[in-house]
Amino acid sequence: MPIQTGPCEAWPTELCCETEGVEEEELARWTLIASQILWGLSGRRWGPCPITVRPCRRSCLAALPSYAVQWQSAGPWIPYIDAYGVWRNASVCGCRSDCSCTELCEVYLAGPVYDVTSVEVDGVALPDGAYRVDAAGLLVRTDGNCWPECQDMAAPAGSDNTFFVTYRYGLPLDAAAIAAVSELTCHLLKGCTGGSGSCGCKSRQNMTRLSRQGVEYEWADPTLIYSEGRTGLPLADLWLATVNPYRMTSPSRVYSPDFKRPRTTTWP
Image 1 (cartoon, rainbow, N blue to C red):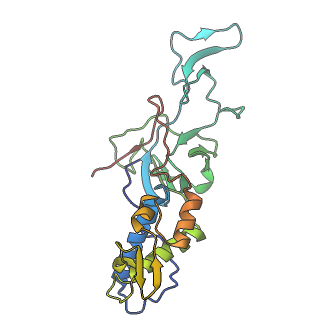
Image 2 (cartoon, rainbow, N blue to C red):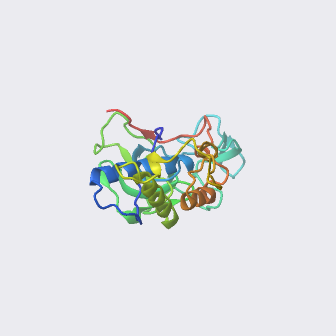
């Protein structure tokens, strides 16, 4: 999966502030900025983002090698290390998952998988009922056939002997996320679009206390708020505390040199 530096698009909003007189381009710009801020502060996990990959099928045994072990009538077994680093015995009868009694044809998709747009094998799009997605990111074939064990990686999409999967990844945006980005967008619009408000770009970043004629005002230090990964806005910060309580800066990942990952084309 390519390195992602921001949300794929601006998040949907339900603005409760006055936007009359604000140009559409300006409104879209600040909505995207608010989306980028919350996407980064929430751990860079929200989508959906489209991607097309060329998966590799997990195969227990492509062909029976010369060192196959024959245990009387039990059939040949081949020792191997699975994707989790555990030693297992591979049978020539097919690959079985931990809970399946029969062969389960599946490929791995880096996720979280939001939905699958299309699956093409040899240039032919498969119907939706020919596959399903199981957690975590396993695309399982359900029409009685199996995914290709190998393909021509030099051939373009739509050619024979190719296998392409187009899907969207990332966590779905719920009502709380929409409320959070809407509040931050309104905050940025005040004072940032030529208005006379004291929020957003025109907020007093360096003032924390004001005393005048016996009346004192005290504000929280914005630099401390930002250093804690918060915005200072109630709805936005409540959402951030809910979905990212440990202030993760990126999604957690597990890497293994023995695990086959789908191939993606990054250029041209």
